[in-house]
Image (cartoon, rainbow, N blue to C red; front, side):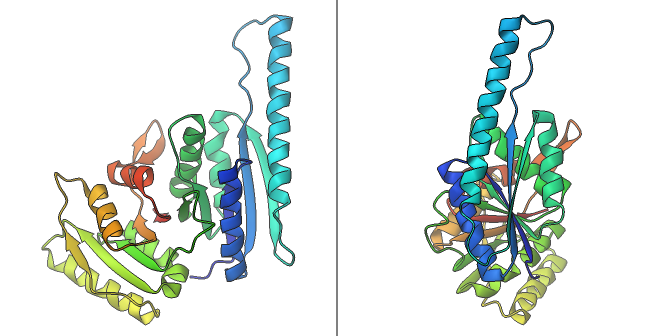
Length: 278
């Protein structure tokens, strides 16, 4: 797996600009083209008949939102580095258009770098973009905590393995990072005694070794009351891991795919970068 096109979903906040800085560093090391995509929400028009005063107020809100968006675009554009292939795009849209635009942007990218969703309006937007890139576009996503641009990461990697296509896709997508890591540990939570699962684990270790990955002996652990996400994060912390690689799982809701329990827990509570693939 070679990354030639990296996408970062950005915004004008300090965290958003930090995400762009991380993406710049990653793209520079991989000699990849970097695209920064800003998706901002336009104020929703009021329903029903409105007075002239209300229309003026809505127009003022739209203008203010547009000016904030343009300021964010300029801030991202100013981060361009000499000699790097870098492009910036901005989409102003309604809430209903976010998933379509996020998926369309990610569709032809090798990797999408996204915010770690939090509670609140901005967190809802970040979560919608992440779901669209992962489930609609099928693009591997790197969730970047705010600190990730300023510190080294990816030296000690945890692979959460469960012998599924999603986990295998995540491993393949992460190969550029796995090869560069100092050490890699495979973690299996609540392992199945099934012989085929054991064979799949052995094939994974051999696959990684053939790609030049310094992989340690696999570690198995048990979850408490089925809380697999909590068990994965506990193993990552015990290992002093600074990158988690795992498959992303979801379920259908109102014609869309949303995160399942384990994936949701990891996204909400991870303190390290997480590479997800579906």
